[in-house]
Image (cartoon, rainbow, N blue to C red; front, side, top):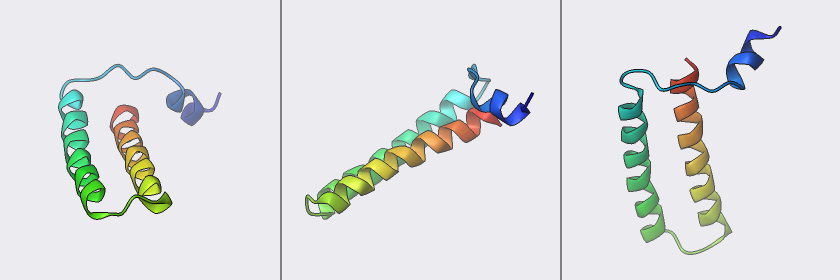
Amino acid sequence: MNQQIENNFKYHKPKEGQPEKYTLIREKAKELAYLVDKECPNSREKSLAMTNLEQAIMWANASIARN
């Protein structure tokens, strides 16, 4: 059994203090998203920036949940 696979593909019930971390990360990312939306012209690049920002938040939250 591969422990990393098991860990990466199971449900991680939030532990004490984790929901607050998730919220803080989302709030800061939202600030950046508004800045990008305001300052960048509508374009493929802007769309990719937003997509990658969303992806960064998901990975950040996964790092908290998994570790």
